[in-house]
Image 1 (cartoon, rainbow, N blue to C red):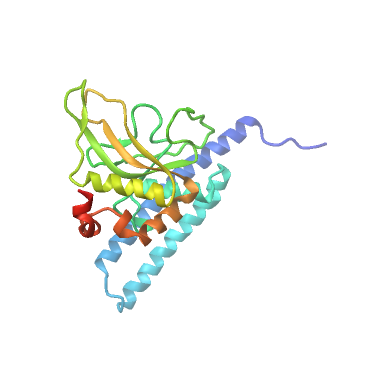
Image 2: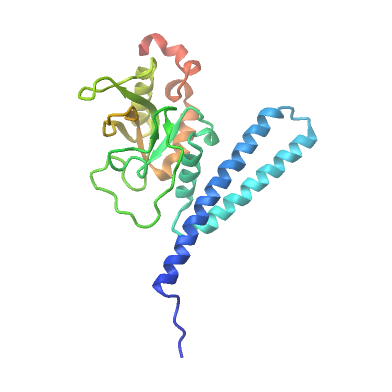
Length: 245
């Protein structure tokens, strides 16, 4: 007699456990990477062999967590690109890809009218839980499933409730110009929009570039190769300050 497989309820319970495990591993990875960053700041001498060995061990721990993320992620259909995006998004900046001044927002963050953004610190929201249960995205959303928004600027909305205006930073034109330059030289779609304006001060205007998830690592490498044209910060603006103002 042929044995029956797990019931639909059992399969759902197993998937639910995998989702919870995946979220816990993302947080473990974030904590592990933070330990590595803190350790590197405190131990800058490359001839300190004991410190270098400790760093190797910390990196090994992070690698093991990444392997676990890959294993558990496969159970809930997270690809390598999905996992990289989830890691970067959980950390809230692209420091791991060598671009600490950048961040990303996902289609989950930007769905609906109240975006998952930390308006006080002008960063992606601190809490991030990727949807992995077949959620259907609104076809009218600017950032589709499988895409990300590479953030060039997050500006809080200020002023009257009926006529709110973005409080752009002094270097906004440089940021906008570089976002446009990335679209022209590498590809992507310019994103300029605000979330639904509320009576509180949490509304924001976001400027960025929409890209496929799978191009994140290549895009970061391209930006690192062209810092004077595409990166953000006074050290990159200086040679072009007059022409961009």
